[in-house]
Image (cartoon, rainbow, N blue to C red):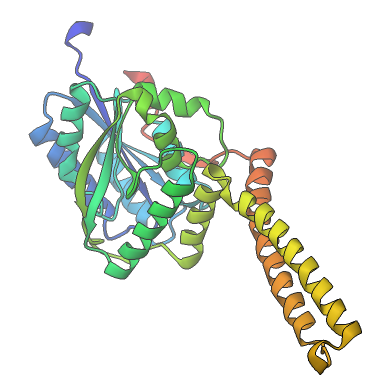
Length: 324
């Protein structure tokens, strides 16, 4: 085949962890969309498994054994909700890459929409949730979180953006060069996307099709702290200013308390209650900001240690590239 007639390659990257009920149907659904609505393109499907323990890997192996267009990466352990998808994106060979969550919350029918925008010259297409069928309370608190981060960040963050979208191979080349052991894809897209003619596309987030969500309070907190410590300075600034304010207030209280003590102001004996209240108030503030500063230090420490983003156990069907 002449090189000029070669089809563009679309890479679909599917990160998964314990998705035994979803992974096979997800692959089938993605293939149906690609074959029906995007038939003029070639495609590959790259599944990166984050050390599943529920039989997901057995199903992935079965899929890969009968379909060489489906490739798989098995991690040696669970590297978290950010590292594993980021590594998966970097392993794709397509002219563009589209990450799709395995739980069906990312609507697969958006793939042709993304590709159309890409063909119009937009090298980054960001899918933004305008509504969600998830728990409305969770969605409400997510909205507050996004607005807070957007308001505090030095980067123009994208509200209700989870990473779902399309990335041109030139953008993938950029993130491969970042050399970041704790990559936060939402922040990276917000920081560099404008230079790639980024466009936002709205969608409604669906409910998880089957299985239980893997988000816990700890994982949500970890995500919030990663974005907060990576893209904001306000925590440290507040600690500085509030620390100065508390020090000044403590000095005023100390002077007033000293005067009352030596003059028995208004005939009332100055007791220890104001002093105890001040001690506990300032102590609580100090502990809070010590913890906050600790989060920044933990972020720095993780980057300095510079462990790999992911350690792979093995790959399936990637050797097919060498045989083409």
